[in-house]
Image (cartoon, rainbow, N blue to C red; front, side, top):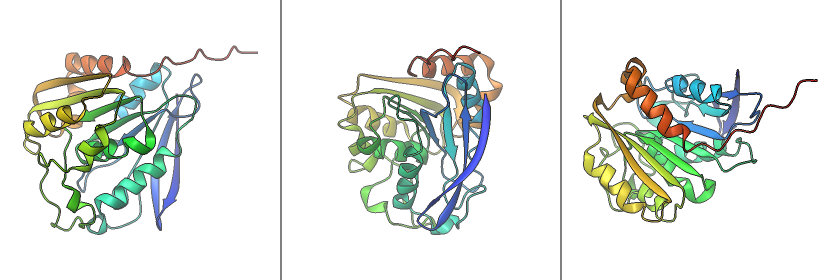
Length: 239
């Protein structure tokens, strides 16, 4: 595998990104969206993306404006801005296969909301948050409502015509997202080819801090996701 750091511009901000590519798949087919918070970065999920690369699957992850190495101020960010940034990142995926979207917490809300435009083959959502429609333009300065089971959530709306595979990784000790939110996701995914919830009963909301140290559960999660990824083409023969 090879890690390629780069940046791209969206609405006046420069977003830091990393491609993890392989000989089998030089263009990424997986897009990972991180969650909300001052410490969220594109590197948090690299333990999974590197594992997928070992199976021939390339990925792209980046930091939303106001996070990590990207420009911008977190308190100026909005869900609409982040949705636009997610779509811009999706435009940098390969075109050979339908993509897979991975989202964590707020990133899961955003991943589901861009389904109509991106048309992914699968969604993998970790501790998915959901926000109401009216929150789209509220800045992240304390104005944003808490995650909840909002019937008008753009995440739920994005799922209603989704016909791919949905995998939700739920945390049994989640202190941020109520289980009713996961029910809302499942209720909205009636047209999905498959819908599964894998519960990590001992994990709290910050699943990517907990999971790397849990060998058996990590293998279970990796296996569940790998089953949803497209078959990686064989590496070209060496001359």
